[in-house]
Amino acid sequence: MSRKTVYMCFITDLIHGGHMSIIKKAAELGDLTVGVLTDDVITSSFRRFPLLRFEERVKVLENIKGVKRVIPQPTLSYAENLRALKPNYVVHGDNWRRGFQVPIRAEVIEILTEYGGQLVEFPYSEDEEYQRLELMKRQQLSLPDVRRARLKRLLDMKPLVRVLEAHNGLTGLIVEKTRVSKNGKSYQFDAMWCSSLCDSTSRGKPDIELIDLSTRLRAIDEIMDVTTKPIIFDGDTGGLTEHYVYNVRTLERMGVSAVIIEDKTGLKKNSLFGTEVHQTQDSIENFCNKISAGKAVLKTNDFMIIARIESLILEKGMDDALKRAFAYVEAGASGIMIHSRRSTPDEIFEFCDRFRKHNSITPLVVVPTSYSNVTEEELVSRGVNIVIYANHLTRSAFPAMKEVAEMILKNGRAAEADDLCMPIKEILTLIPEEY
Ligand code: SPV
Ligand code: MG
Image (cartoon, rainbow, N blue to C red):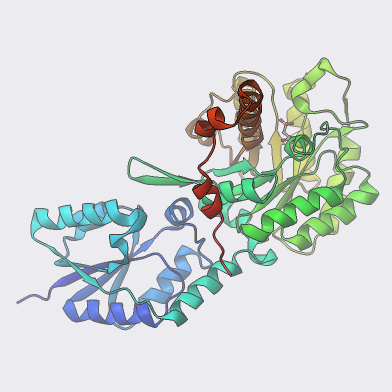
C-alpha cells in the first residue's frame, strides 16, 4: 500500500519548538510536502515582513527531519498546490479558525472534500516563550538596520512598491496596518512617504522648505516609534550640498531607507504649482555634484539617494528630462523620480518607455497626484518600481475635520456631528497598549 501524503504551508521564518512538534506530527501521517509562501505573498498579505528571503526559508525547511519536499506556494490560497498534489491530509494549527485566514481555511476544506482529503488541525501552541520570540521578531523589524534595508529588499521582491504619505504616529499606523482583501488576495502599503507638503501643511505652513529639519526628523521619530515599514523622506532640494551631506548621514543612521531630492534651486515652491510661480531648475552639473557628495558619505549599501527630475513640471521638455535622468544615474543616483502635473499619464509613460530602452535596472519612482486615473498595473507595465500616493491622508482628513467644525458651529452643539465621528469607545481602544 502506498504511503499517505501530507501538505503543510509555512509563512514564518522563525521556526521554533511549536512548529517542530507540528511538523513531527504531520510527518507521522505520511510523506510531508511543505509549501513555502513566496516573498511577494508575505509582503502583501501579512504584517510580519520576512527577515529571511524565500530561498533561505526553503533551505531551512528542507533540512528539517520529516520534511520530504519543499515547494513554493505562490498564493495565500492553497488551491493551486492542493489541486496539483491532492494530498491525503492538510495539516495546520487550529489558530487559523479565527482572523483573516478563515476564508483560506474554508477553501482548503472545500477542495479536500472534492477529492476525499482530510484537514488535520493541531492545537496551536500558546507557549509564552514562543509568543515572546514572535514579539521579539516583530520588534526587530523596527530597528534602524532592518527597517533601512527593507526598501531595497522590497524592490527585489515586488514588481511595484506601494507607498503612502504619513506625517505623524497616527497616519504612520494607518499606513502600517491598513489591509484589504480583493479576489482572494490581500493588499497593503509597503512603505511611508514623509512629504514636505504634508509635513508643512500639518503645521499650518507653506511648502517652501520652511519647516526645519529637526522638526521633520521629530515627526519621523514619532512614526518610527509605532511602525516597522520603511520610510522614504522628501528631501526637497537638499539645500546646500555642504549641509545636505550631514543630513543624509542623519537620515541613514535613523533607519530611513531613501531620500528623494529634486533638481531645483533657490526658493522652492511645490511642484504642482508648475509654471504659475517662479521656480529655478538646478544645472545638471551642480545637481550631479550634490548626488555624488551624498553617495560619498553613505555608510551602508541600503540607503538610497533618489534624484527627482522637475523638467516636465517646469515645461523644459522630455529630452531635457531624459538627459538629466541618465546624468543623475551616472552621478550615482540609486533611483529616478519623474514628476508630472498633467491630468493624464502620457508624458510619464513616454519618459519611462524611453528611459527603460537604455536602462532596465535603475528604480523608477512616480507620484500620480494629478494623473490619479493611472492604475498600478499600467505603471508596472511601463517599468515603474515605486508609486507614491503623496498627500492623500492629509487631503482626506482636512475636509472631514472642517465639516465637523462647521456642523458644531451651525447647531450650537455636537450631536449632529456625532455620525461623522468615530465612536468614543473605538477611539479609546484604537491604539492598544502593547507594553
Ligand atoms: C510632496 O509630497 O511634498 C512632494 C510631491 O514633493 S508634490 O507635492 O507633488 O510635489
Ligand atoms: Mg515635497
